[in-house]
Length: 275
Image (cartoon, rainbow, N blue to C red; front, side, top):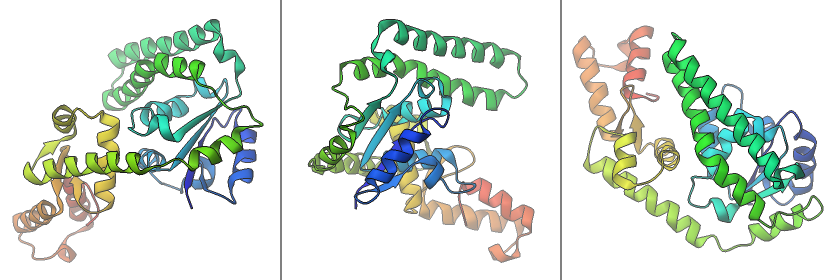
């Protein structure tokens, strides 16, 4: 059964998302944040799962376009290689086709970015603020192109959306699969040949966007092929074992079972994953 993710804003898109889920549940494995996001699950990890779904539906409401979380999803998804093939937009906010509405949204996010720039100058929580600023910047960087795509797409109406999703699901996905698999193999080969590489180095070496790198590294981590340590370095599983052995040796320990709770936590932080 193919997977489908419904991206929507809680404020004004819940009814549309619930109706879609009810109509599609017999044919697809439907995922959306309220029904699929597990308690305590990392939202960034969840976005990687969204990117791996077979199909994506965006329920485009007015509040969706002003929601940081929703637009963060779009910024992440729009950088993926299968974006044009797997995504369909259900436009609820018809005004978005007008130039005035588009300019209003662009202005809104530009003001958000300026506000974050000022906050970054004056806050003591530099790391957290920088994360927020980068998220807003990502939205600003992709927004005009996204709005243009929405305007020029033949977006399905509410009446046609289900049949359009079914049609979309029947496409030949071989090229999409081969593209993502090739990217993954490329990343894996670099990691295996060059220990201590970083996400930014991978981005520079491959030419892939940071969102694609994030997705591929996340998948390699899930398959226990790669780990991301506390210093931002990416290693193979063999390197993980070496790091564990080195840490144990530095403490005069022979086994992980001999570690205290704090030492265990420190080791987890060093290797960037579960033991």
